Image (cartoon, rainbow, N blue to C red; front, side, top):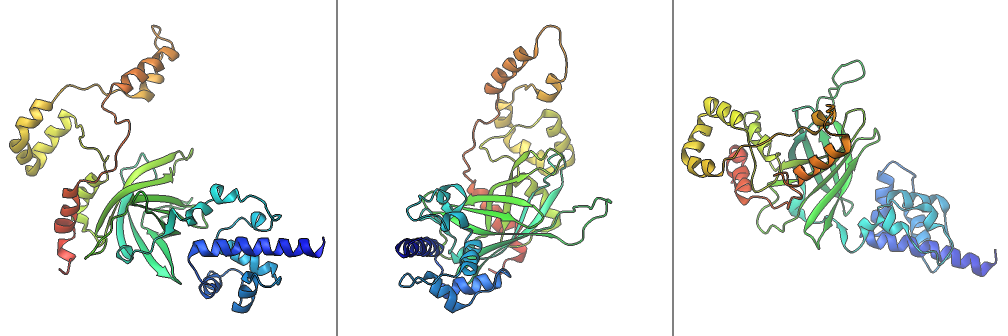
Length: 349
């Protein structure tokens, strides 16, 4: 390779690394500290500075690799020929560092939060507690989740230590949302997505959002569920209300007459509710069909072939009360309930 081409190649590498560093909002010293604290390749300030200095052709491959690993860059793209279009910016996750998606820097969202979601076994009613710490380290926000489920080993013995997942919180300022991708070396995976709101006088005390994770069952279908975050721990006696917060976020919901009767006989609060609002509920009451797709499809019937059965169910489902989409607009009364009842005993104000 001619010297001019070598110079162009080195400058292209340096330019790509500097572009990535600018998107990360770290300076050179912060980047060096972060790489060394990540227990990966050890680097020193002078070498990192030389690698990023575009007035020199000095380059150190080990340092380039260390920077790529920490900033989650595609090494092949960074080392590619000058003029190569950076397609990885949109394809491998580096788009998160673009101007539209920035690392969370709102101090009102820093701290330790206490959350709930359901078990990744979607056939289990188990409610899982987790702790989510969002902190700023070396000018970069990080997220750490401690998952307090009751996983068991292959011998059926429960693990005593919580699983720990790590990630980075990002803000989509255009749409006022925060999202986190949390993973660990054993393959656990959670994607959390919730609304971002600018607080003036207080920090985050309550938030509901969406979680995506693989189901723990053998075929590992994608599991879509709600989660909830609190600034303060919730007493075990109040978790029945948390379960309601984890239900489908929708302006209305349906419940069977049988279940209503059971609750009215067991919970005086439910009886009082129906005494107070029965005139509204009776007006809206209507008989319902419960159509179990699995049961229908597993039942042979000489009067209809499977294609017609599926066609019929799709037409029925389209006309059903099942929501076609959900606008994730939280009910303000639930946020107030969280602050004034669920967390009241532990608040200092």
